[in-house]
Image (cartoon, rainbow, N blue to C red):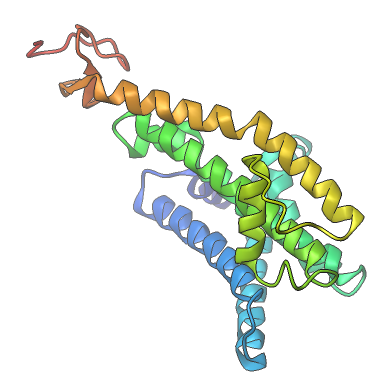
Length: 261
């Protein structure tokens, strides 16, 4: 029981050296696996492709072990299984269990959702403890949202269209170009999907772009404007550095600020 509590603590902890190391290690693995997916869309030698597949298999095995450890440590296992982070973790490792039983294209499509595992490390509690200002957390959240949307849709459209339309979707960069142009509703029309699934994804991209992209960019601009109107007055209690020009109390902990201009 003590071992279970200790493992559960370190899987969620970001303050101790061990907790930080685990978080950083998992984050690196997620980014590395995403990089492998991108590299595999380019013409590479079979030996390199085999090495990348082996590295990816090792990463997935580590993710499986982490998922099982989190499940084992969870006090309420049903609540854990329906948690959004757990569902994302399960999607990330599902190809490991489905390989050889379902169509390989379906399995490869699931791999692109692995980047969402970073959401576990991008919650506000994590970021406010690592950074001194709320703005940095908001910037990080907005940028990650934009990156994740583009990355996932690019991966999905590439996986769906590459075999049927290799001229337009030859590499991951081609898919990124199409995703950005589609979601920003520019729509040059020089690259078009050939399959029904590809067209359906395109419709989803457009709706996603209309619903999320302007909101995220608008929030980013608001934060940039707001930041220019702040001055550097460190709070002696919580350490928050930047406050509004006319602020008398810390907006994070309520402590009276010194050296008000």
